[in-house]
Image (cartoon, rainbow, N blue to C red; front, side, top):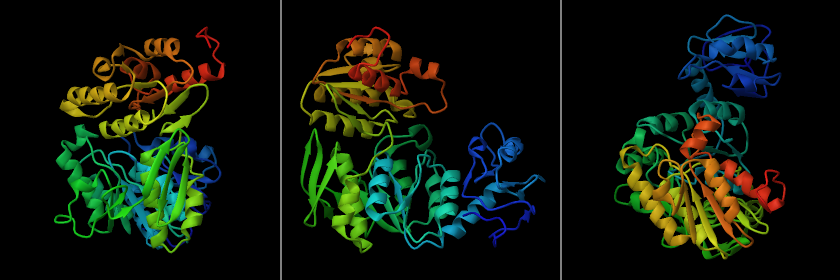
Length: 437
């Protein structure tokens, strides 16, 4: 519990009415009687503008450079937050850091379940990580931290903040190229998580980190890797495999989830935990919406619409291809691919045509992504709802455009969660716009 009256690892003037909080936030909208607010500089405005709003919401304290009620007043709020996070992290005996071009959130969920660990929420920015470390650093349970980057130098900053005992790279592929520039830069930047920690890389990423350049780094997953699951079977009901003689059942999962489960079991074994109990926890994992969530019914919808990169779309198409029924891919634009974006969309579209029976594309690269191309999301949705029938399996995947308005998403072909919602309403007979059932 973050307590401003405890011994702080930085110099601060603490207001006498400041009190302990259950957690911290950098988003003033989340501030409340148990949630303290950290006023950080942003891209367009400073968090100091929201200090009074956080106090009015009942925030136990605010970390700021302003002289305000219940303030923990410092010269630099971000530097203080980072120092506080590093001090709390040092109190924990086992921290797992996970990065990769795809599959980070899935790997985080399965690793945390196997270890019975605390784990990062959806956001993986540096302020979010710092708040998480302050909240849970002193816990006796392990911590699992998702470490995403989109610019050069950021991984080194994250490693300095998190100081993971185990560094994991799930996959390597073209993602955030506008900030990272090239695959070579991605490999080098993400590889910095391996330098100060025990290094583990997923089967897809393993060829990028050879033993000659990264001594001691070991692979996990299936196939020719150091720590391999055995006898993997993927069916519409889920994935099944064994690891060191322990059977693992993952409902409504595919190969990517199974590989994440292997990582979890490996970490659990090294932590001295019972593998049978760890496998039972893995079978109950529920990933956040939009990350390969399978909705079964008279037709099946695979909601993988949270975000997209070429390597992530390829993995999703592999999973779709292995399922029975008429397979339909619905793909939208992948963001931050730089000058190579048209070529990469075309490559993904070619793979979709090989692995799906019907292919839909929407947005700027609709024709590259699918044989049935649409300019906007509403146009795509209307056509798709007319086409889908019982027994179909529909994969929906695209980038989100986090800061975009719904209208911008519809025009650009990102944020396809609305397509998932429409499909589920049609499947369940709850649509009221005449789309048919």
